[in-house]
Each structure stands twice: as structure tokens, then as C-alpha cells.
Length: 340
Image (cartoon, rainbow, N blue to C red; front, side, top):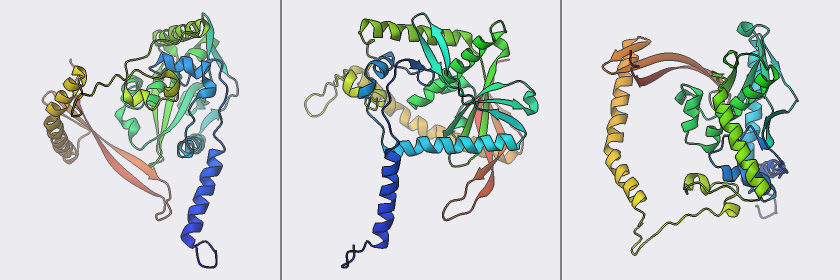
């Protein structure tokens, strides 16, 4: 601030940014919850699902920075909707809330869109849209790969999509489950490219989710939370209900800061053992991918493995210091050859 009490240019910029964050923070609301939802029925922890209903008023709220990411997801969704319509497809919103019934409760859900037109003809298919970090979708060959993702919320996506497909199938009862599929759309937050994955309806997977819901509703009726999962700091310490659940950490630290847990000691030994192999793997992968690019072929067979090469046009949105632009990236993947 100057001697005259006027904010400097830098202070004005900082104040504007603080005002924007405050406005975003006002959009963060704590809402009551009475039933399980498709968006998190795939969570790894049934105790979390229990607390999300029984202790919903005690949920630890996220901050304005995370809310801004949620808001950006809606912006990306609108951009994808515009792209699909421009390509000749029909995008229909539906305000209806679906309910998949289990023995003692429901799993509710709200489909993002129904897509038809183009190659789909008059058939409408379920469409779920996500805005994710650049290139994240390239690590998934099928929807089952998401079940092994590092991020907890990403591991929930397959269950969300499958429950939407289940609810749509129930609407058309009597049809063959094998005839049902949906589209999972991902728009990269940096590239603005829409990538699509076809997801087939898996009735057995959905039955497992319904059984999970029954266990959670039984626990709610009995007022007895499910057993805690084995402590995992990546999940437990970041959970919205850590202060309610009070996970059993039991980290035994001896004299001189020595962790006495034999499992963690084995993990450390394995980590140190793999470290040089990880470096060697990265170097060999870079070398083989470089050969794949130079060969100018869509795929190469190399011993027990394959190198797949494809070009992908990516659109980048305008930034303060740079206008919008396009770039063709060469995507190279290495995988083991399938038997037979």
C-alpha cells in the first residue's frame, strides 16, 4: 500500500483474486444425504458410505481451490456438448433421478446426457462426462483399468457408469443386457480434446454393487458402522470422515525413529530393490518408443511385445500469454503381445 493509503497494482490484483476465491467458497454447501448414490457406490470403503449418510452433517468440506476444479468440470462439459452437437449428434439432458432398488434401499443417480444421432441413429445411449488432467484417459484401455487407478474418485467412475446402465436397462426390462452400452467421455483440462470410451453393461458387476448397498443399509439400520479397511494413509488421511472414523493407524516407531512394522519394512525393501529397475524400465521404454516413432508404422512386433503408434490432433485453448493452437502428438504405447 502506498503512503496515501492506496493499494498498489500488485495488491489490487491480489485482492481481486481473493474476492474471486471468496465468491467460489460461497458455493460450497453441506447438503443432507439420505440414500446412496451412483457417484460413490464404487468407493473402496463401506464405512465411508455409512458415514456419508449417518454423519453427513459432519463431513469435512473441501476448499475453494477444489470447488474451482468442480466448476471447471461443468465448463468443459458444456464445451463437449457444443462439439457433439456441431458434429451432428443430439444431446438430451434429463432431469429425472433414477433409483436402482436393492432389498432394503436404493441407489440414486442422474445421467449426464443421452446421446443419439450420427452413427447411433435414433438409439439413445447413456453418456457420462468428466473433465480430467491432460493425458489421464490415455492410460485406460478399458473401463476396468479405472478400477486400478491411483485416485480414489477415479476408481468410483466405473460403478457410476454401470449403475446408470443398470437403471437404463431396468427401464427396458426384457431386453438383452448384452445390447446395452454407454459412452464415457473425458475432456482433457489442458488439451480440450474429447476422448470417448465405450462401456458395456455388466450385470454381474452391478449385482455386486447392489449387494454392497444392502450391507451398508443393514449397517445403518443396526447403527453399527462397517469394519474399517486396513489403514491406508492415501485414502484414510484424506477422507472427509477421518475425524469420525478415527482409523487405526498403529504405526509403531521405536527408538531412533525406527518403524517396527514388518510389512512396511518389507515394502521399503521392495521399493529399494525396484528403484534401479524402474530407472532401467524408463530408459528402455523411451528407447523403444523412439524406434517406434522412427519406423513410421502403426504397429511393430518386437519379440514378446508390441509397439503401437498413432497420431492424435489436440486443441489447446487460449491462455493469457498465448492464443489457441492445435498440435499433432504421436502417441506410442508398448504392451505384451496377446497369446494366440
